Amino acid sequence: MNTFTICNKELNSYFRSPIAYGVMAFFALIAGYFFYVAVYFFMQMSIQSSMQGGGPMSVNDSVIRPILSNISVIGLFVIPMITMRLFAEEKRTGTFELLATSPIHDMEMILGKWLAALILYAAMLALSLVSMLALFAYGNPDWRPMVVGYLGLLLQAGCLLAIGTFISSCTKNQIVAGVASFSICLLLWVLDWMSSFQDSAVARVLSYMSVLQHFDSFSKGVLDSKDIIYYISAIFIGLFLTARSLEALRWRS
Amino acid sequence: MIKVEGLTKRYARHVAVDNISFEIQRGQIVGFLGPNGAGKTTTMRVLTCFLPPSSGSARVAEFDVLEQPMEVKKRIGYLPELPPLYPEMEVAEYLTYVGRLKGIPKASLAKRVDEVAERCSVGDVRAKLIGKLSKGYRQRVGLAQAIIHNPDVLILDEPTSGLDPQQIIETRDLIKGLAGDHTIILSTHILPEVEQICEQVIIIAKGKLVATDSVANLTSRLRGAETISLEIAPHNGSPLVAGEVRERLEHVSGVGRVVDRDGHDGRLSFTVESQQGQHIRPELARAVVEAGWNLNELHSVGLSLEEIFLELTGAPKHDISAPHATTMGAEAGAAAGESQ
Ligand SMILES: Nc1ncnc2c1ncn2[C@@H]1O[C@H](COP(=O)(O)OP(=O)(O)O)[C@@H](O)[C@H]1O
Ligand SMILES: [Mg+2]
Image (cartoon, rainbow over all chains, first blue to last red; front, side):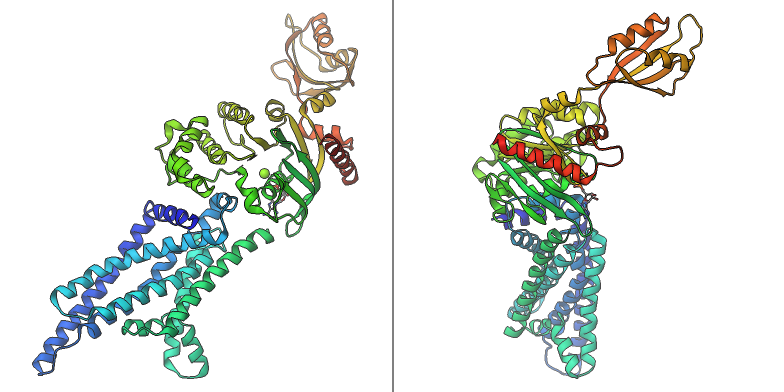
């Protein structure tokens, strides 16, 4: 109950600050560009392929999949902007004292904020979905892999948002929180790259840790329980760490 | 209603609150008095379950802050030093949000928001953004959020600090008006504020309890000696000689000490302290007039907070010594114990 009260308030606050609109515009712009590029290449390729007498190309493999992968990378940049203020701002202005002295549990507070961030991100995904629907109007893609892909995007965002929420609870300065979350997202991205170059045990561990790696199967439309478990446990760990951080804040100070 | 026993709060290095004990009865309005850094905010944060005590205990309505924080939080309304406001929200929207957090059922919430907005005179700005309000209004919105769930206990941390004189008067009146319904603790470093609003006073300095007493007792204890400020001007143009005036004042019966202050334009200013239990104002006035000078100004100066501590602890200047303060604390604690 309190979770929804807080979630509702956070969403309201998002849409009253320029941040939400800025982030959404940024997201829509970049996602739109990738969409355009993917469709453009697809058309070139299919013209070529039909001239060479090949069969029709799959819209799923050549358009939807690269777009989903691109969106998952955009998420790395957008998510720190969504989470940076969650706790840092309340700690700076003193409103955290109101939350902490109200009869609500820390977890309700954390879940409410995380959920609001997730809903905001889902709204952005919905924006990108609009252009995807255009594909259905002009082509005949399979909708099932797309649903799986979007589920994967949501799970991946949930996990990065949980990390961002944790970082925001560690500082009073939302810029610091934003930069730190962004660095971690970047690190996860780089990790993904590095692990794709070699096949040592270390690389495999790194690859397992990498948030992006687990998205791969989703983008192919494959639901793998191993990846789902990875994301869900990462979400739990992120939110649990946030709870510990709020507790430590009181005992340490 | 509130019972604090041997409460100590240690920050990383130093002790902010050192073994203080006091008790507050239901319906009382208590001033928590002490200079900056005395530990007032820290004590209030322990009472509101924001910070855990390092040792000792604090109970609100028989619930321990460590063991049953939820029960304590339900019964406390808290206005921190910095009112916890969201500038991007409208007043009524904000109060509704706080009401939800405090667990007020949805059905009665709208009515309750109207009531507290009216009570705290913020009804006329209920549709305004909090970020656009003046400081006085913000403080009153802060008070409205503290009382929205009709808590047994109200904890107000320096509710008048940073306001202009008119706003201070309004806020004090508002707090006095709330007194009937709640047990109130308010912190301040201004003595007159305690005299005006409170029945009981708890004085702390450097984290230690200095005294707990009724305001009436405290003032009569302190009324022993008077401090008076004087301004004297020459009459008929003959200039004043500071030494001469000073000597004259010192000879008035009951005068203890005379201190020169800077005068200007030929006028002279003095601060005169009476001896214990002497009322010297009429005598001083007569002496000045009989000497043929003009008496421009004569008024009683309240004791400064620092002087009160010295008075209460009996410690020499610059040394409110630890053992002494502890004895005072113990005495006060015992007194509180008897009165229960
Ligand atoms: N979070 C904190 N960490 C470390 N020291 C603190 C903290 N908060 C307050 N203090 C110190 O504790 C002492 C008491 O502070 P405080 O309770 O705020 O006093 P007051 O409210 O009476 O001015 C001060 O010396 C202050 O510097
Ligand atoms: Mg303070």
